[in-house]
Amino acid sequence: MEDFVRKLRERKAIAAGTEKDAAAQHQKGRLTARERIEILFDPNSFNEIDTLVTPRYESYMGGKGSRFGDGVVTGFGLINGRQVFAAAQDASVMGGSLGEMHANKIVKAMRMALSYGCPFVALNDSGGARIQEGVDSLGGYARIFDANCEASGVIPQLSVILGPCAGGAVYSPGLTDFIFMTENSYMFITGPEVVRSVMQEQVSQEELGGGRIHATESGVAHFLSRDDQECLLKVRELLSYLPSNNMSDPPYVPPRDDPERRCPELEELVPVDPQKPYDVREVIASIVDDGRFLEVHELWAQNMVVGFARLDGYVVGLVANQPMYLAGTIDIKASIKATHFIRICDAYNIPIITLQDVPGFLPGTSQEYGGIIRNGARLIYAYSEATVPKLMLILRKSYGGAYCVMSSKGLRGDLLYAWPNAELAVMGAAGAVNILFRNEVKAAADPKARSQQLVSDYQEKFNNPYVAAARGLIDDVIEPRDSRRVLVRALHVTLSKRDRHLPKKHGISPM
Image 1 (cartoon, helix red, strand yellow):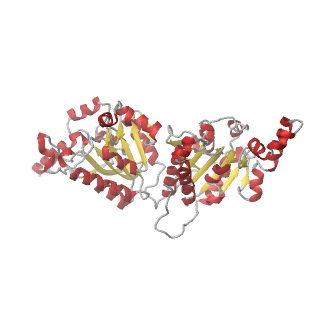
Image 2: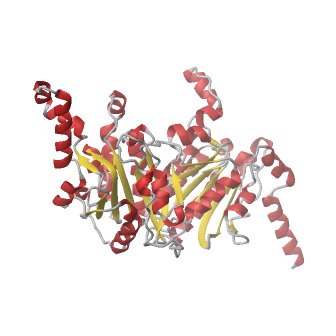
């Protein structure tokens, strides 16, 4: 038996790699696949599978060789005490390139995660398709994509980019729920050399597809971190808000924060003047448990804020206009950002709380040519399609089509509230008077005084929350300091919500 055990240990030692392999990764400012696994999972909980898989013989052509495991570590273990499956590509084995058996290992782990209702985390660090294996490598990518699609909306899928991710490899992360990147990682379809030769553009890897570019410009990355360790700890944090699968509820954490706590600071945080900006994240921090808010897409489309928090221990998704950027208007990027987040929440049984302070959609030719109509329609579709509890609080402005789009009663919002200073109308009072009473103002002996009087009359008659309350379009007008306790009570009553759509294969979301 000692002989057998010795041979087994020798094989597993080969699979684990050498100190030289680890040093090469560390020189790049990156960790090894197994070091990453140790940070991601609870201590001593990870169980590796397919450790001794070997690649097809084509991988040994040209004098290069793989080793046991074929360049990817797969298995399962505990994260925050819950079972999670993972695949971590090993850049020390043929650059982490993907061959047939490498792909088979990943797909097997994904299928197991789907069968057992566990989240799946992919740690990407790969040079792409393994050239030696040709079409077998490409077929492996296709099988991974298919598994991503099958698991979509059933189990949380997280992609973590910790090195290169290029060519067809980028589409697997693109199919998952969330993408994490480090500042020294990159993703692109075609590399700088191809761009240089075909498009005559001079661009570096970082400028073309670095983590910061994707976090701020393209919106591909939901989270950006300085290094591997910070990134993996952020993955653990996100998983603490997500259920294991679409049949489970998100993790409940007994609250330390008083559900009846009042928030008098809100009356100072939000200026009454609708033209003055403020940071809506401070409003969120005031309302949610312990002020803890995990923002998603923090650096992209900053006129819309989305993220996870807890309210009386229950996980909620927050969608809020941000008056500090573009006055909180909704543009193409904000529509895309909110749409994706709402659909994530709906898929995983997470109630949605919308904080509205919106003057409307952003005007201009760039928005119209870029497709604000279809992207705004996608936001409508997401809110209408969502069957989870939908709560809404109007902090200040709610004008025009933006009122309709963001969780209104017409889109089956459950419980809607407004502060007493809220303005609900087609547009602001000054704009409305300018259209409706232009000639009357011009003909007045004192046009300025007449305009001010008409604006005051319009605000009294139309542009306030009491008209909407009288029509039943909001459920109550509340004091700002009562926002937390009102939302907590609304959440408790709506958690038992059961809503169903008409039977159909699937709807046709706007393109």
